[in-house]
Image 1: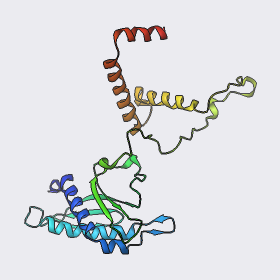
Image 2: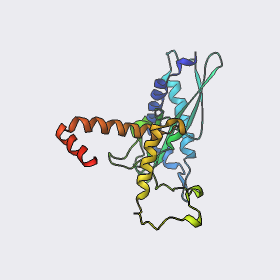
Image 3: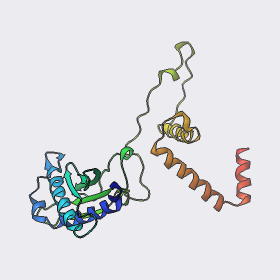
Image 4: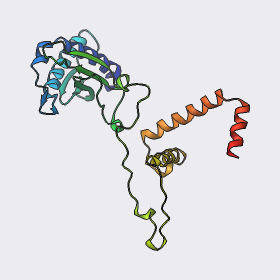
Length: 235
């Protein structure tokens, strides 16, 4: 019975909820969005939960879902679907709000990029229109085609075991500040070549895609003469 609550119906509910929220312009204007520098979104979540329940009741009229009830709680919209046999199914619709169209996303590690996302773009003047959009999370990911995948510079850890004893210390060797890039590049390749030595990461999947795409494009666009010339350079 729980199979009836598909991701598609949850997404359809999210779209309906987003439309419902958009109709609540007066309530959106009355929301206390911030406290100092903190972005609370508590009142927005409460409004969204109310709209979600209303949307479900309308959406399911005269459908196979009409005997299924839902409860919604904050933060975001955490939905409990209560089936006729009293079993439950849990789903989530993520909420975002900002006065900016580009904001930091959620941590990728535990993120379901297929889940629905409702984004409220708040106007600078609160009396103007609050724009609402809905999509799956992955549709909203990314700022442009050249952005960096790290949100901050790595903080390389220090390893005492890599240091030499005082009676055998190495000669001074000047390296450029970006020398750590090569280290991380080697580490990234090592991870995908020897996955048994480390826990799997999203980074590994991305490096594999980069490697495969590079090889395919390189082979397709490189002539035999160019291959030979490059081979001579590394002989």
